[in-house]
Image: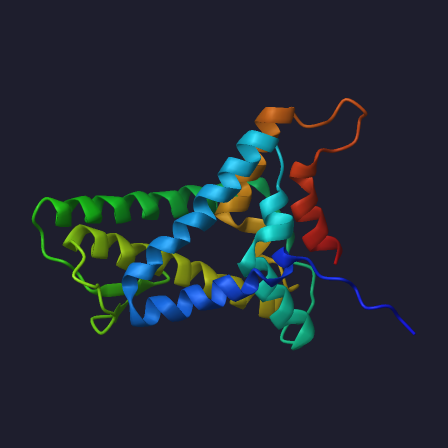
Amino acid sequence: MSKKIKKNWYDYMWIFSVTYLVLGFFNIIFAWLGLICFILPLAISIIHGSKAYCNKYCGRGQLLDMLGRKFSLSRNKVPPKFLRSKWFRYGFLTFFMTMFLLMLYNTYLVFAGASLKEVVTLLWVFKLPWHWAGTTAAPSWVAQFAFGFYSVMLTSTILGIITMILFRPRSWCVYCPMGSMTQGICTIKYKGENKDGRKSERDSGIVEVISK
């Protein structure tokens, strides 16, 4: 008989990702919780020079893996070379950060007196009215940031699901903006290789995704 693999607490982080999306549907202010997924990966890579967040703690990665493997929703095909190339990964990161800065600018405009836009923008193109999601009497700029940030999180989740279906379960991890940023930080921190000649942990995320 095969032994059951003992799970750790961080193996259930996918619950956080699902709960986050559900809460944002009913109260947009919960979108601020998504900042945890931005700050933690950067902090871990800066302090420890590690992609531990991507490999262990990323709830979205776990969710995609579960949907693709347990529920067999993935074609389980190796992602195309262009998807994991540097020009695509860092090009997508540049585009992603441009949209993020635009989101911050819109938040500033509301802070300066512009009208609140109760809209979630899907895939940066499709505007979905989201006026039913309560704001708990929060300041308009707080709500505007929440609408924008939820748009970013929902869009990246949908992109992850699309690539999960088309390719391997965690193919999103190949070009995830946070993964690209943490990998860049680890590259600078370790300059490519450890003293013993082995590749540092910064590379393990992409290698793991492609090899599974």
